[in-house]
Amino acid sequence: MINWFPGHMNKTLKQMQADSRLCDCFLYVLDARCPLSCINPEFVRVVGEKPIIFILNKSDLVEKASIEQFKSYLISLGHSCVALNATISGNAKVIISAIKNVLRDRIAKNQERNVNFIFRAMVLGIPNSGKSTIVNNLCGKGRAVTGNRAGVTRNKQWVKVDPFIEVMDTPGVLLPNFDDEDKAYNLAITGAVKDEVLYMPDIALRLISKLNTINMHILSSKYNVDYDESTPYIDILNAIAKKRGCIIKGGEIDLERVSKLLIMDFRNGKLGKICLERL
Figure (tube, rainbow, N blue to C red):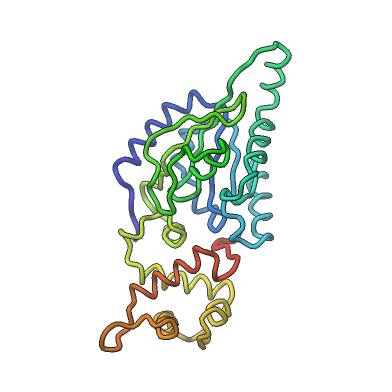
């Protein structure tokens, strides 16, 4: 079972709960490739009854039909939701518009009273979901530390993104316990869990299983390998290794190398637009 919850995450949760009293709404960032797996029950204590704007980030890596299904689902729960790719400039307007929409009644009251009030939004999410990239996009400058790996942001940061809006970037927080094995593997596959604490061949085999369930031809067309429904997943991985030259001295398969290659191809969208979950 995958389980990775560094000590700083527990500390972060407590700090986020304390800071949440200063916030008017929350930007809840989900990886569009596995949005349900990204929802952390621990954030319930942080958010309380305040408005949530779900951001389906990395939506360019997922087929449009899945994006629309998850948007509709999250909106049906009484929340706001936008889908975007945080690395593309210009998406800041979409997010700021969503913030103003969920706070429209309070904004209108302040305008009637001619009061200038700064509204604050906290950015929540698991590691490597793109929170800091979204903050950078919002403020138009690289002020938040980003990186394409889990656990980069550590310190809270307030940044002004509009004359009347500030956002706080927060470190990514995983679930303290992964009771759902499938969700744990989804997060490992997408990079929310540090690769260094994982056995990559195990993650690669789980990815093969998921891809074959979605479409049996994804891997055969990408790597030009032949297999059928009865082919063991390890044999498929070995076939990919041979095609890509992942061989070590003596002709043995370099399992670690081919596993990382397959996983990175998925993460970079080279296997197509794929969502690991279905409603």
